[in-house]
Length: 101
Ligand code: FES
Image (tube, rainbow, N blue to C red):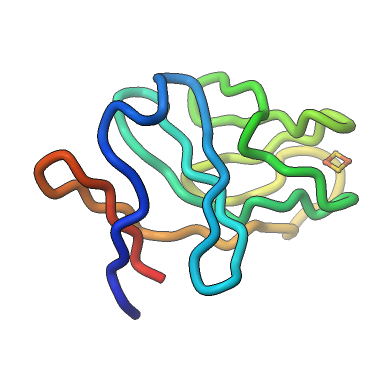
């Protein structure tokens, strides 16, 4: 795995997300609870982008049909047990945000 700088602190408001592309992979970077989280960007239902989804605690709601995922574990919280998004480790160095991809 490789650490890649993907954003700056302050670029993503609290309770917001931003979609980034790293190595041709769409990743959602979220800022919530004073921390940063990263998951696959695409919902497992019909590939809706999760980055603009509403965040409540560690849960993001897909903007298209309201499926819910835990942004820390990637776990889908509705419907199909065992469905998960990939998650990525996040590190902060100075004003920069890095992902382990
Ligand atoms: S695409 Fe996310 S719930 Fe349908």
